[in-house]
Image (cartoon, rainbow, N blue to C red; front, side, top):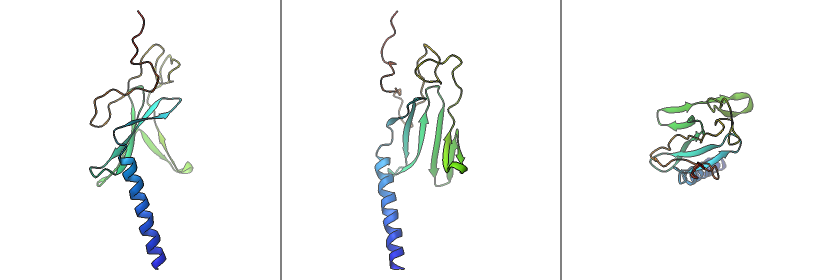
Length: 135
């Protein structure tokens, strides 16, 4: 019995430490998907513990998974029970995709949604969005 209590206590200490570490990354946009160019934002509680994530897609769509005290918020994602996974929906594909992403039209710039509490625009590293196009 004592071993079981020690195991449970250690498990929840590790879980809390991991959630606190990732919660410290909240607000950052981390490159997530090389093909589609999704930017993942870690979501955290007021206490600084990770409670979910939001993936910002370059076509203005986002996929969110967040645990709250009142339940789970899932937007543009679904449980894939057979794969024991979460499937994210990327929204509409571009009609005439360019080389950046199948979600962005040729010669168009990516359009990401804003992060929670931050209006600074997101940019995939090296996408050239901050470089003016030649006239």
